[in-house]
Length: 255
Ligand SMILES: Nc1ncnc2c1ncn2[C@@H]1O[C@H](COP(=O)(O)OP(=O)(O)OP(=O)(O)O)[C@@H](O)[C@H]1O
Image (cartoon, rainbow, N blue to C red; front, side, top):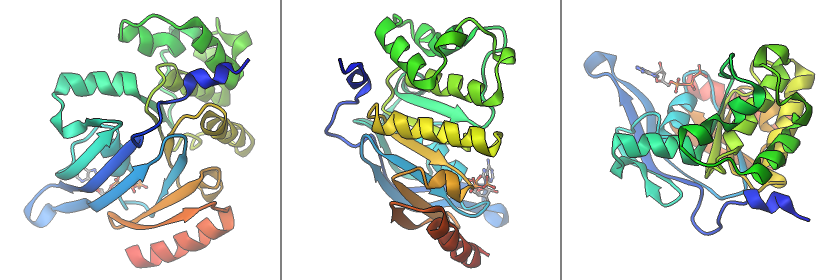
């Protein structure tokens, strides 16, 4: 029985499309061009890493892509929804129901059990918990025997697995991960990256991950490089060595 197909997003439109997105902070002497005319398309069922020197615009890119921040110009589509056309309440609903977030800090609610944390987005949306989907997600992240524990009773890696399960449980169009392994030791980080890889390859999800770490980025299908707010190239089938080499030159250009 292929229960994993239940997570497959509909084919057709890309999961995410950004067209000529720019973001300017401040004005006059204090103006910062955090993003300059960035265009990108993420096909469904792909894993993309975003890399660039500090200050190159990675977080701004992720926030604009996820509807957490509004571009100064350009358009962002999540599936068939153009974000700038949505009212604030619609955007809030879209973020809650069609996007999964995974942050470096796991952002779990300490008084809720693992299961309650995982299903929170569904309850906030007033949606029924799909028991088959929940079981599939819990199995994928390896937490079946921890469902009644509190986050404080789990290791960092296990807490990040809860956060990933919570990100998956609404069957989002895309999962956005911001330095998801930043707080983890090397071995635990590798397990979380393997899980994100499985989320894409085994479950058909779409993942966009910002990271500083060439090894983490090498788990992705492709790496998008930013330098000084601009798209600075893309690498398919990346290896840590090739990524590190490219980053060295990006650093040269951005300073
Ligand atoms: N709210 C803001 N107000 C003013 N400037 C900002 C704001 N947010 C970001 N910036 C500036 O925009 C630029 C891009 O910042 P951003 O955080 O997107 O970069 P980053 O690549 O994620 O950096 P890091 O790797 O250090 O986290 C930087 O120059 C930053 O100082």
